[in-house]
Length: 99
Image 1 (tube, rainbow, N blue to C red):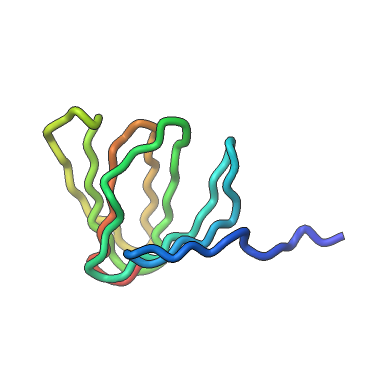
Image 2: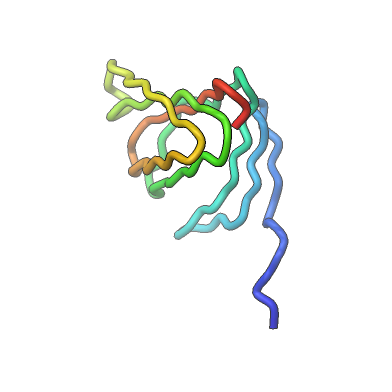
């Protein structure tokens, strides 16, 4: 019996694409590919915590503690960095280099 399988879905986005490995009520596993100069929307997740590992490139990360917060913090991720995003944290990723 083989446990190997193909990705669930590939979703084109204006900023690149998502390769869905798994996506259900309890768990989400995706590979995000973001093109240089592109960014995803500023958003948050009510139910899910996210973890990111940057395989290559460089990202500018923007976070704010809540949707009502006026303050946006920025920092960079480079290849090999990890980041955990707890549920409710407003966040956005912008590619400084293809990532």
